[in-house]
Image: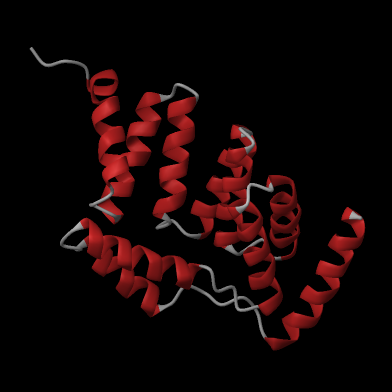
Length: 184
């Protein structure tokens, strides 16, 4: 059944490519990133983050967008196996689509497969260096595998992009003593 789903996804993807290649990050994303970095409060930051995620979720291909939606829907109902099938097909057919890798990382993380999750997050960041969700996820994984200095660095980078992230602020406070020690 998996081979059939992959073959169907490949066929549909090939047909959809006739409408054009995946779109690149453009000015609306940069504008939203600038606004997010200067957001006045957490509520404004949350609104801008949702808009950014919507932009990042646009692949330029209806088929890839559908695979992403199906993967996200499967994660929403905790069907990680189905999510992994859709998201693996997505990343196989659209390896330059950062949000596909990010969502695949979320699925791996749910399965506590931290190595594959970290690999997918690194792919995400290679394609979209401003993906604060991927940086935050990488920080969480690094913290879980007891790499506090690296986790602290990842979380610190998130705050430069999204300064009102209360969970990241809490994580930095939690790691502060382990990373920087106690001042005398």
